[in-house]
Amino acid sequence: MFKINKKSIKSRARAGVLKTKSGKIKTPFFMPIATRGVIKTLGFEDLRKLNPEIILSNTYHLYLRPGLKIISKFKGLQNFMNYPGPILTDSGGFQVFSLAKIRKLTKKGVEFQSTYDGSKHLFTPQKVMKIQSVLNSDIQMVLDVCLDSKSKSKDLENALDLTILWAKKCKQAKQKLDPQNKNLLFGIIQGGLNKNLRLRSLESLLKIDFNGYAIGGLAVGESKEEMYKVLDYLVLEMPDNKPRYLMGVGYPDNIIKAVKRGVDMFDCVIPSREARHGRLYFFNNASLKNKFYRTENINNRKFSTDFQAINANSQILELQKYTKAYLYHLFKIGDPLAFRLATLNNIEFYLDLMKNIHQAILEGKF
Image 1 (cartoon, helix red, strand yellow):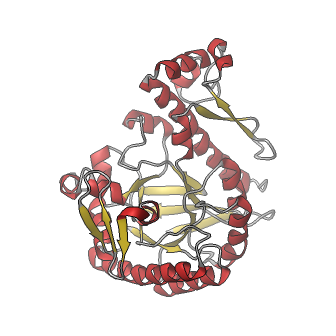
Image 2: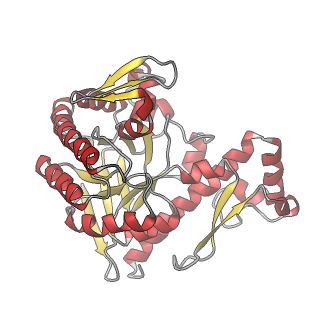
């Protein structure tokens, strides 16, 4: 399932391959976000050009719209969105965190109101696994409780107890739904910035035994230094022979530093969300050192007369042929093409970043 091909002698970085039922993925990798079954503004031809090895979708949102009845007709999310590659689905745990005003936690699960129509729903571990079974995602996540990393110790401890309880129930439900273990199941380590809770969380999950382990509850309010401090001690204790996933991270420099600490998997809304606000990512050099990238806000007036290509180094023809002046114009008139071109640029940047990191590890330069 997971094979490490090269370990760095300069850091704890490793390059490998994660095998799923839908294909192999080179690690470390980044998952573009297709929350509702679409990377906003991009169609299947765009995905074919970008060729991400895996994308991430959201259990909570897909459950509400279009609903399981529709997706089951297609026998899974891949057919529904016409994307043949691997998909990871999160469990809805982050929505437990972000929708705190309209949800209620119990040992049984999480009760919440739909953000669409106010209807009430209950997510139990069993139901979450059932939903992900219908989605037929390659990598599935347990239901967890994600709190602000600086929450009170007692709140973090209570959340952790629920997360461990739900993790056991998710594993049991998954075994019934997928007895041949075609789809992978990952546990999620919680505990905020409390070292004892983090290590207890990991120890409990190791006893349950998952295909991979995710680090949740970071990038939710703590500083970068605090996040790196958690990674410094936690990753050392995580299994060497299974993938390590840092959820919701992040900016390119965050990814670089996390890979050097031994992390294999990442996801974040940054490339697509910032694209829609006109913030574009570009490489300065391929060394991945110091200021290896820059961002430019295409809404800056100076680009109104910039007749250079949006990205002359892109593999996507439109980014080679359209100018920055034209993209500036598109943003000013609010045309959807602006959001699509910017999203293509940023997703390609992130995917190329991971390819460069993988290659640098293989060559002993990272």
